[in-house]
Length: 391
Ligand SMILES: Cc1ncc(COP(=O)(O)O)c(C=O)c1O
Image: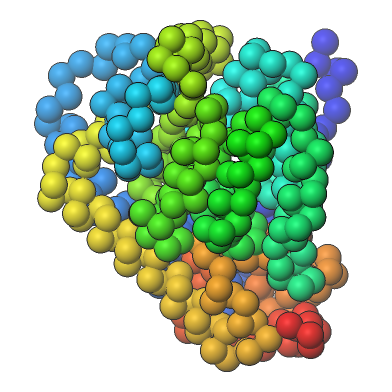
């Protein structure tokens, strides 16, 4: 039977990790992998998470199953920081990371309305298309961003979305757009909210970097605008970046319904769809987040460490742009990523000649570098002819 399997195409980011580890050059820079690093190159366990782990170790007295909805208090606490006000017709369910939330959302869409298309703006996180397709949703694409000019193609996006049919789904990055760092401003969110309401579209917000852009409230301001305008909406939330829980696979899917009766049916359907997938989500990360939300001290510790992480990313952006004015756009972009306009051969030369590693698309993770690397990065980009004179 297995002789029928063909090798899937290699994952370029995994190959990059391996090549980086094997590179013996002292000044190598890893801009490839999408995790936050501090200025000493570590991805730390956050202080509040460490403390919550100590509390969990001391207080947890059973590991019995929780049920397909996961840790209900975790889900409620997240809903409060996302939505910020009483919203009776929203239901949430804990998922294995943001990926699990997106996959479950795709399956929910396919179960509810198989004819709906999911509109995704390109470029995007490379897993978006595969996750929605694996969840049996039909994907439609529009252009979100022009890498050469570093601009959001807002008019083009609105034109594409105005051809979407009633009940079609619009996937939007809540903040810290991956891979471009180019977030919609509030005026643009408001325009999309108007279109969503007018055409009966269903927004699906992927909120994977909450608090890593402009701060906890500002990063969900657009989401709140669109949630208020839409009768139905989905939110895939990841705690893996903003709590540094990556491998603990911590997230949730939230769905807004027009009334309580429909919301309850959605909640039951989500639990029902989760059962044949992962049955029940992993507990550890969600329990830690719940413990953090239950303590003012831990909440304060977490949010202030998040502010520091955010400030470091901004400092790196400023350091690079300060040396090279043609990279000034980095300062206006938010979150871990920006997408440089590089050819495959320039990306390859950066790796082979300078030990600078990045995704073949030219996406760079600014949180992967030290501030003191800024000068060398700019020199390397210059050396491979990667700085577009018009920028
Ligand atoms: C835009 C976006 N959505 C979702 C995810 C999935 O996050 P998780 O690791 O929680 O599955 C990622 C992870 O890189 C992402 O960048």
